[in-house]
Length: 230
Image 1: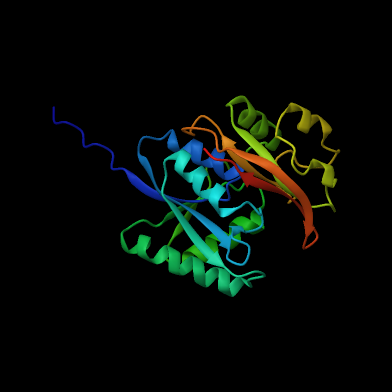
Image 2: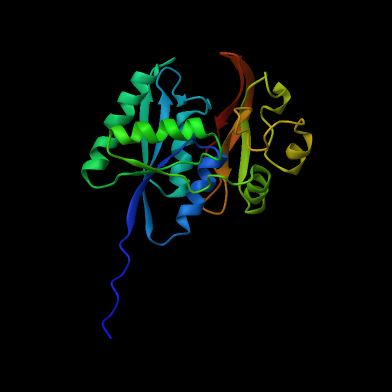
């Protein structure tokens, strides 16, 4: 009997916010021996030197990727960048990977169809496709699985129109879930909050930081994370 050909490994990019959804999506694909993560792709606001929207310092992003043992591709945009700047920057980032035959980008989206459609349409312009490994998951089960697996995350950004600012700087744990108001998505999928993951089963070591001041900027509350020597 002739031997069967081994399954060819597929290289992918991961859209990486540093938060829990993209982290659990990464964890899911890492369980597949046929997938290799070529790089984490993160948008950074040049003016602040921080992860766009989440407000986490770039040095912590870099330490996070180092602890995960994965290459990090940073995409720099300006403060208040319009869609055309963002899309142009993403296209320039994708181009060298696409030329090497890497044409799949993994996202941690859960249920917002308009966001998924936008991503897929943007990728199609650059002959790329999207993969959504945690799409459709029940968000209550999702966050409990996240906690149960041993991931550690902190709330770094809160939309005060949906969640009290006192949640900013809290850890994702059972107490946090118990305190969420009725109607708030436990994964913050409607934009209630954003997170930074600093430890978990696919981390080589925790990313160390101390919590700094909580400030309001552009109508959102942000908890600053101050790097601590590793």
